[in-house]
Length: 456
Image 1: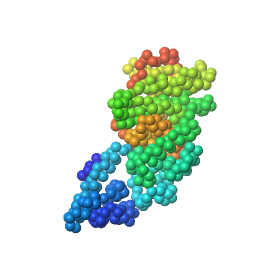
Image 2: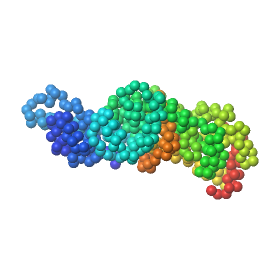
Image 3: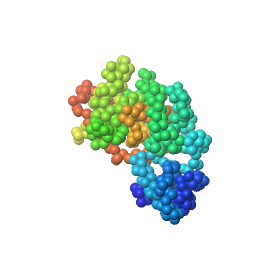
Image 4: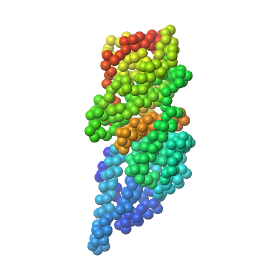
């Protein structure tokens, strides 16, 4: 249901009388109600709380003191009504821009660090930690301890609170101006926390949870991929992630993708469990997947022979490199397989190959859904600069692996915020001139394997 300015609620009678005496009296009345205004629904109470917190300025003194008492009361009533409507309009606009998902809950009204220390640390239940930080309390403090070497410098905020501010923003995509009064800090402090913690995650956690696998780990990945997805000799799936952004000044054409919206492009590789093991982030959305691939470290590693065991493992009676699964936007190589073009002339064996490949490739599509549902800043980056965004993307992918490795529960309700129709995925087929003619033998070899296995 679309929110409208006409849906704004009037102040209840007790709060109206307090409002006439000034914002401090209104704040005392609201606080005495335990963060819930009498006669006002929970959603409206939260908006009213924002009105109260930001309504400390009051009307100009020279205007408030003019005229007799009835005229002054009428003028004040009109002033606060107009102020309320302006703030409501602002909040509604912000809510429509933000894709955050809320489970409304009223906590007592505390100021500054009191809310973090007396509510979050003491009163948050396991469900609250999972909802706001996308991880359990134990995993949160594990992350804090891992980041301590980088974040242990003197600061006015405790390390845990700085990490909480950053992760709260990454998880909910709530704007800096909304988070700042919650933690009792300024918007610039929230921005600094996001930047500082994101860099620390990439520096300290990424080498542990998002790195190139060893030869033994590659063999384990092949077994897992074959067991879970029925595709042999495969170490992962390859695809691109487009993160929507506002059009940058003077660079709009560079970041406008083939679907007509602006984005930052990231190349991602996942294993059979849906965990990321290679990320190349920060490309303009107008670039095609095959161009990004040729400029990535993955391409260099494969070309120099460092991505696969030497000599290659045997498959179907011949030495064969491990393969990655891509879609039509990638070139066909002896280590990258993609479906046959479905032009109506495919054989049953080729159709079976396409079915098997697309089914196995869905592991990365599912990983993207879980990534964006858990870290909703990737649904639309409004507050993040282009310079910081690649680091934020890497931090979110690293935290995804941390949560998956520590078995943090995933709430399927988070998927409700994702609207596939809003941002259609760009996919430009790679030109056939980029395909390796020798790689066709690998695809035919896979067709023979699936034919020998029968339908599945």
